[in-house]
Structure formats: C-alpha cells, structure tokens
Length: 160
Image (cartoon, rainbow, N blue to C red; front, side):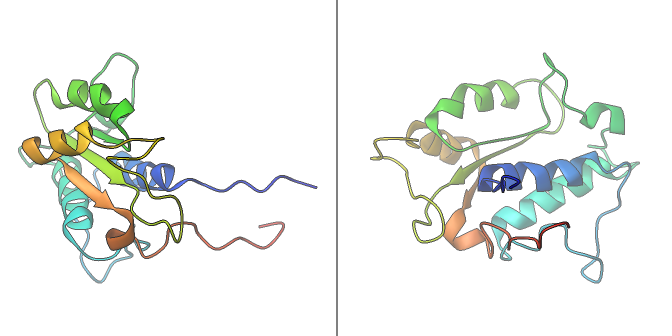
C-alpha cells in the first residue's frame, strides 16, 4: 500500500511562495484571476506576500528580479525566506542582509486544533527570539489560526 504523504504547513507556505516567486515575469494578479494562495484568509500576511511577489516578478519595476535570480542557489542570499522557530533565526538574519528586495517571514504555529501550537514557552519548536526580531524588523508573521483557511489539504482520491 502506498504511503500517504501529508505536507506540513511550513512547506505549504514555502511551496506557494516558491510557485509565485518562480513564475517567469508574472504580472500582479487581479482579483478576477485564480488565487494562488486560496487556502489563506485575506489579511496582512497574504497581502504582503502577493505584493512582494508582484514587485519582484513584474518587468520594469524597481524591484524586478529576473527569473534566474529567483532560483535558490547554495551560497546566494534568498529573496524570500520563511522560518517557524528560533532555530531558523540565523538563517532569516542572513537572508535579510545584502542588497535588493527581501521578504522575511515566520509561520507562527497557533492552531492546536488543526496542527500543533507552539511559541515562547513551548518545550519544542520554541518561537521566542525570532518573534521579537520579526517585530523589530517588520518581518511578516503568518498566524496559522488567523491567516490560513486550510492547514492540511483534503486527501486526494487514490490514483490522482
């Protein structure tokens, strides 16, 4: 029997952002077009991600990044980075350095009903110093309970 793979929320965020960021010269999407983050509630986090992606993928804008510059390469600072614990803080700090457009975000696991909840006092996955740094630097904090309509997508029928 094939193993069912469940995509963790952090990967869902990164995958959605990667799809947006990797799209070659994608224009800013209108409300009438398909929503690439349809599992998200409307709010600051979703808005800031889509605005950033629009800026870096629209030719002629000051922050435009050519498709080759949107691909993750070891040793190159990413233009979009997410973390979800204090263990990711140094990666986020390093990613924030350098010139050019940058988007830094944290996924705050606040939804114990649909996943796990952990933050400042958690014995695992602690998110304390990174939350403070995000507040100081203006990084986007994605609150799972508030910002996501769907945490885990519905299971697909076998063979699809």
